[in-house]
Image (cartoon, rainbow, N blue to C red):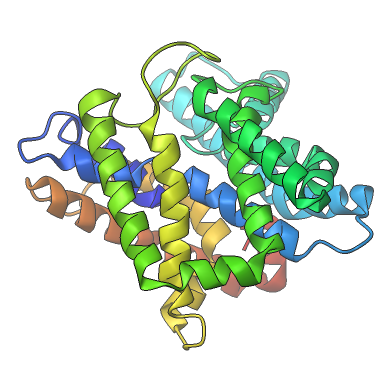
Length: 334
């Protein structure tokens, strides 16, 4: 969904915002999928949580698994940007000190790509993990009350317009999804019993479509960016992504006991796809003849461009893993 959202932004021009056949309705369901990513992170964090939470070793492990490949990919982006700048402006020269300055800013803010802000944000969130752990382990009434209050803050805080060295607003906006994932894992038997019902899938999908319709007609299509608590419009998408988390869990539960090689492949390559898909999109835009002419139809455009980008990115991740072996996770996270 994250790859498709970026493909829609890049390859479809304004057709998702000003379409002839309501394609912004589909686009509203797709964009903002980072919330699902955060929910999954919270679910897995709680699943792997030991009785004795070792904070410092945990952060060190996350630094190796997250910050190291992020630093490598960011360096590649910065090197390509410096080379491109000197090609287009031979008079300009990137000195080592200037490169280091640009790299440091890009690393802290995640500013080299559309979605790279996620890494410094999620690491900052992991730095606050003792607070999440204490909440998730609190008595039921306290845990649910704190989670509900946190969710209300996120509902009205707005998604940030830019990145900051200390991503407080990002944590306030996306943190509730992380907490929701943790609580669903804490009460996993009850959660699985709930999402396994056909009625849960039907109602959650219907709610997601209704909320997308409300966002399209009464809110602001796409992600609702703004300063903290800036009165822009009601963020129906914030609720929509929560019910989509439930719907997707309900769908995936039906494949839990089945061998799904394609799903296993995407799961094991997920962080590599996340790290590399923007580089693939940029390469497809810059290399003539690699990307075929995309159809005029908005839906076909989105489906084809997403499939092409996913295909090329998966091949790139496979090649890096084949060459790097187990060390590839230090380069691309997979």
